[in-house]
Length: 439
Image 1: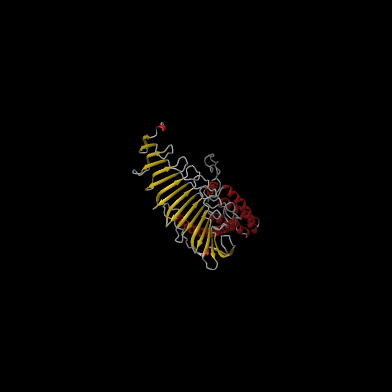
Image 2: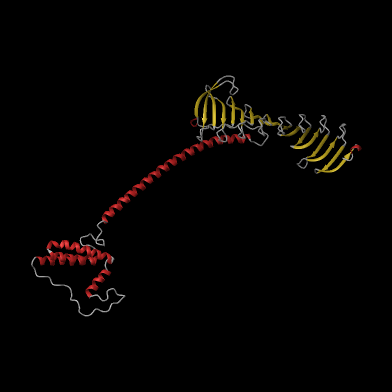
């Protein structure tokens, strides 16, 4: 369509050139308009009532390249002006013919002749718009590149922090594993003497080192000590989890302090003798006071253990080990700092017990055992130093069940009341002194 319109314009331009050159005037190519009356307008047909030539032009407009009627009108106006300017080179007639031809071309195609196409009389700013859009896209791409670089830098930083965290975690696990192994030994439920905690070797590179002088008497030492201090701050919080003191001359370990719960406060103190653990003191409730004391022999087996169970600053439970087994326990059951319950073991089983039931400082109850079960209890109920009540228990059923109770009620050294039990329940009572009835 556009090619035909441009050919028409060129033909008209050639005619104008001929006319301006003195040639014969061009013959009209337009068919005469019929003088017959126009048919009645059909409201559904926009071309009804138009001359045949005009109908052809209208059909061309409707079946063109999809340009709107407004675009064609704008292109026709711009084409008229441009054609007149170009045709003016050949004189007034050329200007008229060029303007008409360009107007027809614009009306048909929607493009301004010599305007670059694109509809609506051309788009002089189209190229500039494309360049601006390209610049904006380059700018957006640069911004995306900058954002990507920032993300990469941030990810590298996070990976570095993760590596540090993993390294610290591995160090903490190594220390914690060492402590758990030691604790598992100490916390044994058997009556065997617990073994000293196992000292696992840790790489020297993870410790910070410094040299110190320990004044006389600080550790009960009779002379000043020159020590090499190795500190481990695995979680990098500024508070070491473990501090080891080594003799600066021999290199042997003298003492170790540890923060077992990682709260920033030391809660365990270990003393060594010739490289072996001799004593351990612990603060188990975090109140800043020692509440457990452990002693070990050269072979690494515990010999004694003391515990302050009520946190009053004084030990109230004592365990004694001999030849690797528990032999004795002593307890202060009422927190008056006086021992009132003794338990003695033989071959790792209960053998006998002694109690101060009225807490007057004198033993007034004696218990004997058979296969860890109570077999007999004797008591001094009036505090005169003489035993006046005797209880015998049946252990055949695998439990201690009271079978017989004998009592000297008048403290004359003779049994006055005898009570017989069956399966722990009173079955009968015998009274030898009539003055004691009824009981």
